[in-house]
Image (cartoon, rainbow, N blue to C red; front, top):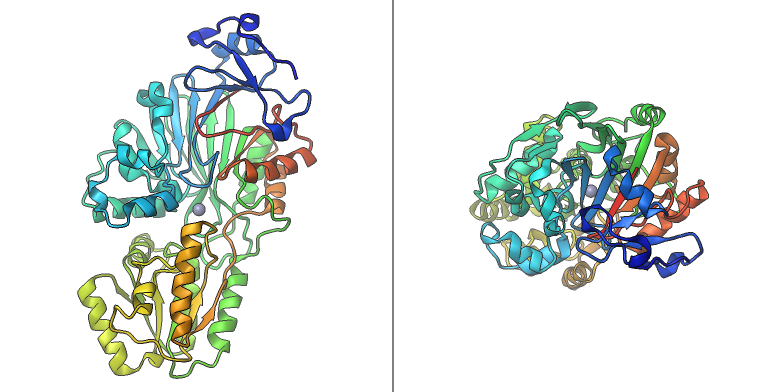
Length: 505
Ligand SMILES: [Zn+2]
């Protein structure tokens, strides 16, 4: 590996002094240089000849800064600069750090600074000098690790519009309304498979994609320096339970037109498979709900509140069982109402939504009176969150008693972090002690696996690939796949870290 000394390279524009060369041990092979500039913020320059690169800045390179989600899973956010304009893709929370910190806090009183202190929000100090250049914030979908930090970070970007799909817009609005915080930035609700002109130079296109929440977009930035495709998160589901198939035709067209950079989630790049369709989860759910003997017993199901396709399957099966369906918990109401507002679901005549304390006690009283065997309860708390409905029911804090033979279906996986594992252990122990039959992992993932990524790379044929959504432990698997497909590390596939920048010409 060739190491450059500062005096060998001299000063570049903006006073940058390339002074240190570092290489990840993992990729410690000749020719895989990663150049890091020691002044803040750090730069990784991907061309071997730094001089050539900095001298050509006038031809508007794409500068990408990993704000969050590149060194660890969570707080997804990427800033992209083209000339004097910056677009931020995603503004998510680090859920584990956020939940741990906010246990008993009043959310509306939290400040960006204190959440930054506990590493729960993306660190926008990394792009301090870009702040007034930010023209738009584009979240790809409504999961909190992609939009949850908007509530706390948006005041840093008072002039930026938020561009997102109608469902994501509804979710954002409800988050602000719940906390009674006024959002002064303009929200531009852009339909899927449409394009919006952000400025003279930059347009944003939202391509229809499948994931585990409705209205997920693959974001395409059209810029004079080339197209940037942001695939964070997605899966290719050709048999969706709710909504349309992913718009693969458009991806191929975009590939034909030429893609400069693909930023793609690497969360499940280590899984050598294609992620199964949501239709598979629907069958698994059907097998349990219609297959187990639960006459006269409670059937309680829990899943991600934003997973409207899964909730729809539960509602359909509840109807088949001839049970009255009740959704208990605030976040379930939030996403169902958001979906109903934009008419992608309609549970009004089939489901009773219960979100506040008084109504909760009232409905539980009625369920006890009618007999719990007449109901399907869909509740919050699939990760064992201590304050969610299921844990409170299990601890006997609500007016509901579990008895032997009651059924609890976890239609989810346990998010593999210590907090969730511990919470789920506590909850399951509590349920088992009461003789409850537990059905785990009635679920398929919403994230692309390695063979989906292979297809995506084939469709869009990008010049450069940057893995995202996870640290190097995840990203290396996507690098491995890219190398299989002819890409070269640090030449056409790049490992980005939080706080680092890449210049792509
Ligand atoms: Zn997601």
